[in-house]
Image (cartoon, rainbow, N blue to C red; front, side, top):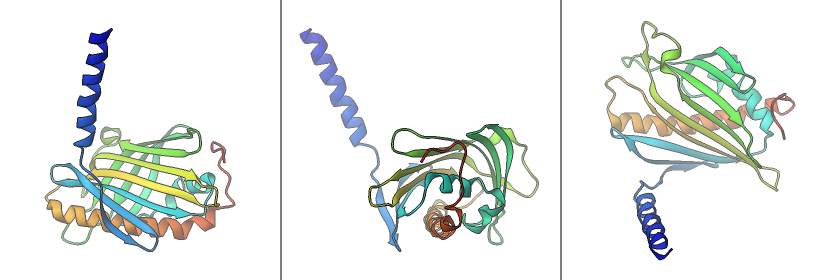
Length: 210
């Protein structure tokens, strides 16, 4: 029993050290009630975390995200978005196109999305589905997409929205420029999200519990 206890203690110390060695989030921007953090991820690129508090229902948030024609109105640099396939009431395969300033080539991405409701929250995960749709002429495919939206209602009537994301834009963009654009894009998207949400508060989503 003593040997087993020492082994478990050793494993705990090792795993704790591993957890502590992970890169820490650093604030990149805090303005207008929106806070953006970054941390190193891979190949010189950063992972993004964005946070804000806003008055919204879960159903309104999901109704806004699933309104494909309106996506370009609030998601930064999106030119179009459409559902390729609805796998279930809570799962979709989505194709999205992004415009880029000349001479940078436009991007596109294919993703699998799914939402669920653990106690006290709504969580939407978006993952790379590169092979679900063929490459399109004139577009560079974004890869390694991993996004998590987490919403939690507070007792003061506000909802905490957190967005954690990483994506590799591909092509020959320098890492410093990609990282800078990621921060700007996340901030602009959160501004757009907050501006659009009031229009969706009367919407009811059949798969969402409030």
